[in-house]
Length: 201
Image 1 (tube, rainbow, N blue to C red):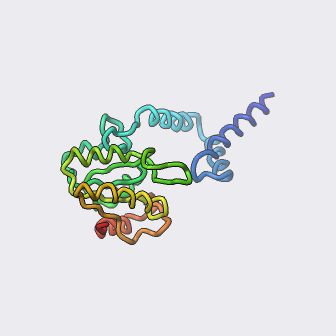
Image 2: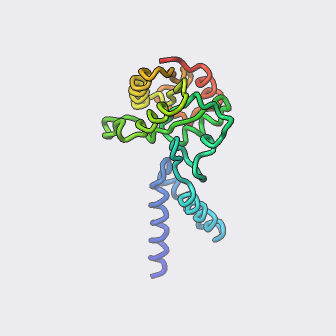
Image 3: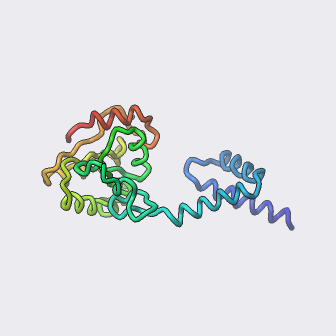
């Protein structure tokens, strides 16, 4: 009976690991066996870290980036250039751009991209909140930093159309990023050059 329970526990771990993005059956198996061979304290630290991040990290009410305090670190940083907002799809894109050290303005995270196939339109994204920020602040430029794929381009085109009539400059990341690629996986030099050579739409 105990062998059956052990097998079921292992299979449940493999199933849960297999749900993680980028983790296939073989990777799930490697991680599961690593955890099985590790001491109980290692497993406890991992489980506590997962629970802690779920309890403490939330979305910033201003820009929708991840935050551990009321607002995220970028929104709380008084040294940031508040005349420029960089619009990205997901919080992980903020981290990618911050690693370049080339950008010193604010961010706005949409929470996805326009994708008719997935029934995601502007109403499902944080577009209304972006327009509210543009109305309330002295923003002179919006940088559209969505991924250079079909959905990212569709989202950038839509945002450009609704923002430009407000009298705000709208720019897009320059070439240098591979078409169909993700900002998350771009190296710092490529992404930094793309920010510095952004173009007006």
